[in-house]
Amino acid sequence: MKELVSVIIPFYNEEQYIGDCLISLIKQTYKNIEIICVDDGSTDNGAMIVKAIQQSDSRISLIQQENMNAGTARNVGFSKAKGEYVLFLDSDDFFSPSMVERMLNKALSTNSDIVFCTGYGLNVITKETYMMPPVGKDNASFPNKEVFSSADTTDGIFQLSVTWAWDKMYRTDFIRKNDIFFQGTKVCNDLVFVCLSYLFSERITSVNQHFICHRTNIASSLYSAGERNWKCLFEALSELENRLICEDLYNKHRISFLNLVVENIVYYLLMRFTDGNCFNSFCYQQRGTERKAAYFRTDIKTKCFLPRSYKHIQRKRIPDRKRKCGYYGARF
Image (cartoon, rainbow, N blue to C red; front, top):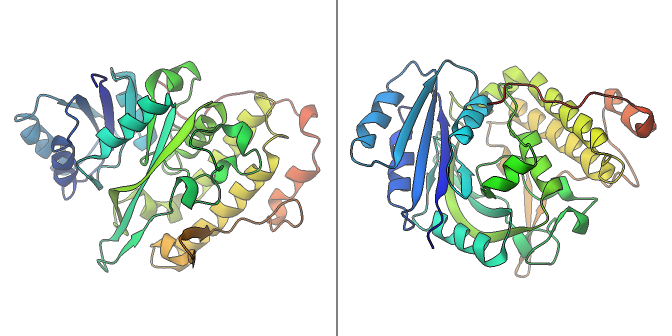
C-alpha cells in the first residue's frame, strides 16, 4: 500500500494528553501518514509539546489559529490534507498501533468511502474502562452486509453509530465531492458532518476492532462543555433537518432523524444528571454471542416521545417548506 493517510487533530489546552496522542500515531505500523495538528488558540503548553515531538518526526505539521472551535479547526486541517484517506481524531485519545493499517486495508479491499471502527472508553476520574458500541454485524443498526449504503437502512441510517467523527476513516475525495464540512459551533460540530456522510456514501463498511482509547470525564473537554452549550445541539439538528429538506431526503429518512433527535436529548440529559460517563448509562445486553446495544431508539412509526417543541415536525408537510441550504460556521 502506498496511499497517503491524513490525520487531522484539533486541540485546545491539551498539554496533558497531546503527547500520548502523537506518540501513539508515530508508532503506527502504517508509516505513510501525515499528521496535521491544529492549535485552536491554546493558552497552555500544548503547542510547545507538538513542536518538540515534531522535531523528531517530519510527518507532523502544526497550524496555529485563534480560538474558533474544533469544527473550524478540523476544516482548516482538512483544507491542507493531501492524503487519499483521512482520519479526524481527538487530541486526548490514543490509538492501537495497527489502527491506520487495518482501517486502510478494509477501505481499499472494499472500495469504501467510510470505514468504522470502535474503541474503549476510559473515565479519567474513576479509571474505569468500558467498551464503546460495537460496529458491523454485532450492532443491530448495521445491515447484514459487509458493504452497504443508506438505501439499505433508511429507517436507521443515523443510528449506525454515535455521531462523532473520530472512529471513522473517510475517502478524501468523497468528502470534498459532496461538500461536507464541520460546523463552527462549540459542541456538536460533527453531527451534521457524520450524518451527511452516511447519506451520501454508496459504500460503508467496518472493522469491528477496538483501536481507540477514548478518554471521558475530562474537565476541559467538549463533553464537559456540552451542558453549558446545549443550544449547539439544536443548531446542529436544525441544520441537518434543513439539509435533508434541501436534498429532498427528509421524508425518506424521517424516522431515523426523529429518533436521532430523541437520542441526543436523552444524551444531554444524561450529561446533566450523571457523572458525565454517558455510555455507562446506556444498557448493554448479552444474547449468546451477539452483543446488542439497547439505545434509546423509540419506534417513531408506533409511538413518539418527542418533546412538545419538536412534535410540530411530524405534522408539517415538508415539501411545502422553502429553506435556504447552508451551514453554521466557517468554511475553508
